[in-house]
Every structure is written in C-alpha cells, then in structure tokens.
Image (cartoon, rainbow, N blue to C red):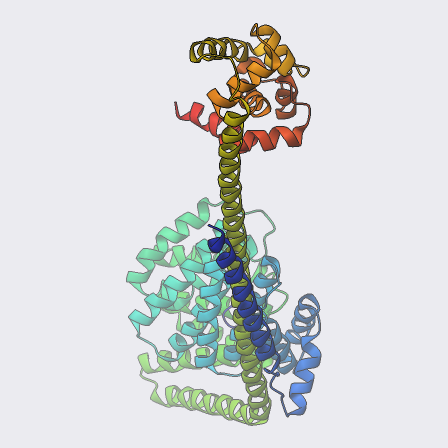
Amino acid sequence: MKYNRKTGSGDNRCVAVALSAHHLLTVCLTIVLLAFALSLTAHPLRATTADMATYRRLSEKSTAMLMTKAGMFLHSPNGQDSALLYYTIVANRYNDDGIGDAERRQCITAMNNVGYLYYAFYNDYNKAYTTLRQALQLAAKSGDKYNEAMINLNMANIKSVFLDVQHDQPQLALATLQLYRKAFYQSVEIRKWPLAVGIFTNMLDENFVGEPLLYSQLRKDIAAFKRMHIPAGTPLLDFTNATISCVEAIQSHNYARALAATYAMERNIESRDTPKRFAADALGLRTKIFSLMHDDRRAVETMLKGVDLCKANHIDDGLMHFYVMLNRFFLSRGDSAKAQQYRLDYLELKEKILTENNLQSVSRLEFLYELREANTTVERLTEQKHWQNIITTVIIVFAIIVSLLLVFLFRSYRRAMRTNRILYRNVQDSLRREEGNAKYKGSRLTDNDKEQLAQRIDAVMQNTDEICNSDFNLDRLAELANSNYKEVSQVINEHYGKNFKALLNECRIREACRRLTDANYGHLTIEGVAISVGIKSRSHFNSYFKQVTGMSPSVYQKISKEEEKTD
C-alpha cells in the first residue's frame, strides 16, 4: 500500500428433411427448457452469521464508494478491521461479469491493500504473501504497471521485515533488493515519480548499502536515478538526494560530506505520515559515520538521541534497531555490562511487541474468522454463479447451433423444392413439345425450310437492340425473320424445345450477364441493367436470372468481381 516499508443441415427427400427439422426442433426446445429449469433449482447459499448480513449489505455498494471508505478507515486509528472488510469485498468482485477494466484495476488495488493490511497490522505474513502473489498475477495479466509496482513493493517490504530480524542473510537481502528494483523501474516506466522516489529510499537501506556486493549493483541504480528528470517538488526527492550523497560520501570515506548530508536529510523530510521515522533513518546513518570516524562520544550521543526519538514517537522497530547498534558498539569496546543492558532492553521490547501483537491477534481472531467465513461463502456463490454462466452459455451456443442447423435444413429444403420445380418444368416442356408436334403435324414446312427459318430466328435473337426493346414480341420476330406468327412459333417449339417467351427471356438474361460485367455499364444498378435488356420488373428479372443461371444477379456480379481480382 504505502511505499515506505515501515508504514507501505425427390419429394420423399424433401418430406424427410422437413420431418427431421421438426423433430430436431422439438428435442432442442425440450433440452433448453430442462436446462433452464435445472438452472433455477440452484438456489444461492445462505450465510448464517450476522456479519454475512453486513457483508451482503456492503456488497450492494459501489466499488468507488467502498474504496473511498476503505481508504478513510485505513488511515484512522483502529480502523484497519473495517478497511480490511471493505477492501476484501472489492477484491472479490474481480471475476464478476459486467465490470470494466477500470473497475478491475480497482479490484487489484484492493487486493494489494488486503495483502498490505495482513502483514502490516495482522502479522499474517503467509496470508499477505499469498494475496499479493495472486494480485501480482492479475496485474501482470491486465498490464497494470502501477499496481504491479505497488505489489512488488509490498512483497519486498515483507521480505525486509525478515531481513531486519535475520541478519547476515545475503540471499534474502539480494531477493529483497531485486523486488525493490523491479518495483522502482516499473514506477519509473509509468512516470509515477512520488512512488518511484519513495521506493528508492527503501533501496538505500543499510541492509543493502552496507553489503559490498549489493552496493556494487546499487551504484548503477543510483547513477540511473541521478540521470532521471524527476520533477522538482516531488515528495521526498530532496531527502533521497541527500541520502544518496551521504551513502556515496561514506563509500568514498568523505565523512565530513557524509555528516553534512545527514543534516540535509533532516531538513528535507517532507513525509506527512512518518516524518520522525525518516529522522530516525538520518540518525542511524549519522551514528555509522561517527563510528567510522572513531568518534565514540558523538556516536553514543547520536544513538541515545535516536532512542529518545523512537520512544517519544512509538517507533518500536526503530528503537529495536538502536538497541542493537548500542549493544554491538559496547561489545566492540569491551564494555560487556552496558552491552548486556542494551541486549536486555532489546529483548524486553521484543517481548513487549510480541505480547501486544498476541493480545491484538486474540481480539481480532473472531473478526478474521467471520471475515474468512464470509469470504468462503462468497467464493462458493461466485463458483455457483460461474457454473450457472457456463450452463447459460452452453444453452445459448446450443441454441445458435440448432438455429444454424435449422437454417441449413430449410435452405436444403428450398433447394430440393427448386430442383423438383425444374424437373416439373422439364416434364411440362417435354409434354408441350409432344403436343406441339401433334399441333404442327399438318404444317407444310419442310425440314430444309425449318432449318433456314431457325437460322433467321437465331440472327434476330442475337440482335440485342431488338430483343432488349421492351415492346419486342412474337409478331416482331416473325416480321424480322421473313415469316409468319405460326411458322415462327412452330420452329421455336421444335428447334429450341421452348416457347417464345422462354427463348426471349433466356436471350435477354444472357445479355444481362454480359452487361453486369461490362465496365461500360458499370454506372447501372442491377435494376438498371434489367430495364436496359427490356425487363421492367426487378422481381421478374431476378426470377428469370435464377432460372437461366442458377444464381441471383447480385451473386453473379460479386463472383465476377472476385474473379477479376484473382486474374
């Protein structure tokens, strides 16, 4: 949370198709109704505790309101239980349907704060680390760099707690520093300068700058930090720069400059939350400098000043740090009595802290138990809702598949009916030809006469200016073919196997096919092309076109354009 670690588908076939579709629809509707009824039987689990009622009541509130309230509780005395409850409710909303990316980021922020509360106020480091690891995975998945930086910071803070207790753990120190570095560079990437500067102060901890191997790595980070164009006025920037100057001066044995830097640190403390803690950090560095200068008097005075500062401001971890420094100092000077005194002070303070934490944990056990019970219930409700969503999705997908299958079957049925109609028309044409043969049995036309007349008819039917005239008829054809109405009709029936109207439509449609792909007619719509070939009705044109070509004019035109692109 806070960046400071110490605070942060024939006729029979058609019938079969229709029956299959009917039965399939019946089965599908039955399955859908059964699945819907099954989903209605899954009643929500009911919580039995009064706190679950509170949990439900708060769960109806908006995420923004819950986050605002949680923030207020977090920074108020004894408000951490309420903050944990509010943040937990928001964190549990991450997998809810219907929330946007911004709200999901708030859920990740809440999850991070839950982890912070568990380690900073409840001393439940396992729960804290587990929660933070889950939040980190979600932040990385969503590309939320800000929350990634905050979570890495809190995970580093947890490790640093153990580093303060377990000295001389180089691998732990390295792992902790690497987490801080990752958090720092993530915050720099998104230009969150206050966060970046705050993290960098933690990287300047004695646990890192006091280890030669770690400091050799840290020097590169310090150089990078100094090259960054961090806006003036960024909180803690001057304090951090002074700390860097102090650390660099110590490493170069320029103790006068190092001492001056510690006073600059004190003058540039800008934290509103924990100013005295930063002052204690400055005193700790000053003590180290006096010790390196072998100025025992001022070293002891500075440590005792640090003790008084930490006692007055209840900075127990800082106080323990000064007791350890005093113990080590007097041991190194051979004063075992004073060394033992500060050892006892350290142990008494440690016992006091542990006792207070134990008493606080006893008073909070019931709250944490009920909160975890509520969490368990919410997880069960979430899982149940998840399965209900899966069932609903399966039903919807199944219904879509069935609908597509029914559409496929219906189209197959229509294609079968069209095929049957074509077969019917062929039979009728054959019958008409037989009737025509009987009708024209007394005709005086010889075979040679018929052949010559057929050639003249062909010539006329190839004259698009004539046949595309909407007034073109059989009389006009007979006139142009140098014959009479009856003989022309006889030859058309016997030679082409169709009547005049069918022949005319076929010729007009063939001309329409040509015009649909001719750039000279590109300005015409399909209806315009239909009128240009003598067919005034768009619906008649479409019907004739499908009879001749087997497809609609729009499909024909589309295929033509695709073929042109391929060529």
